[in-house]
Length: 433
Image (cartoon, rainbow, N blue to C red):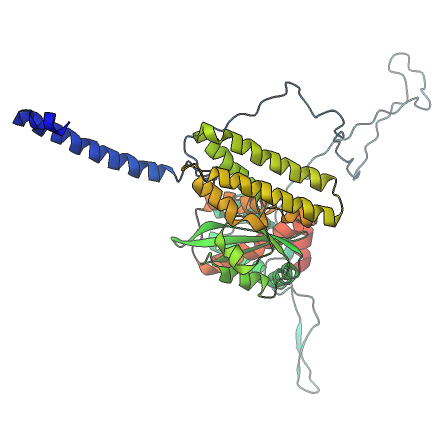
């Protein structure tokens, strides 16, 4: 080939050289663009970062409504606060007296009460000076310590952190509903004051998390004053804990759970967790998501994806009708060998080698949920807990100060925990204030 090129005239050689340089430039550019595109097209890309990617529609069963056997949903009848009775004494047609009714039609109307201006209470405390001993006397009183009452403080905090309203919307809602005008700064000071009062129950949740047998952990990036910080969540049976730290390292897990933590951690494949504890459950949802992504890119991977789904289905069946603990341990060992063999076969393909290595690295942690039935095979509890704050992150764009981060983690922890425990948010927050 080179001999043929050398035989060409000089102008042809120059043209081939120019084309080769152009091809090299375009190849380099394509590689760089593909690397940038990986941010938006990989198995771990959250929906919030996906660009121009249409979700695969679910196949409809063709039937509308709830499946057969699903319990009917009906609202509980509200407590009656007022009764209006309508009666007729005489027949409108013949003017005869009607007597007792044969039937009573019943209709319930639910309506909001008329909105009123905010209640403003003036407290006047009489002070005296004793003519006999000369001492100053202040009348006993029940004056509140703050200008704004607990009901208003709770309402403002929930508007911001549960209803996800920006400060201007909180101010607008208060003005529209109660003719109460507050500045953005005033609203933030009220919310920060609420966070300080919730510090004690917040640290109590940290203590309870440390003593839990199973903790579901996850983390996501969160901008603070332009820098990337990390929002962590630690979910237990009864609590949801949030912390915001500058680090994504092991020291955060040690700070929250303590070095003596002896429970099981459900997590993704981030190396921090393995360096902290050897009692882990790796998330099958993450594994199957990445497996599905490989199947979409490489047809050769479809058989591996189906086998992984089969193993996961077997995990669910064992947990649904669990045998004895000894039998479950035997099953876990057998399934581990099957998964290891599958990973070895994957590693022979250059495109699947990295994924196979990921499976092998977590081999001791894929089947913890079979031996310990209290552990879920996925980390969905932690991911679901983060979603609420991810939506708030999209609305706010980030945080401006470390004090704002403290306020967010405390209030979000208490709201998420009360929801998990089925407690009414407004009344529960008022009790703490």
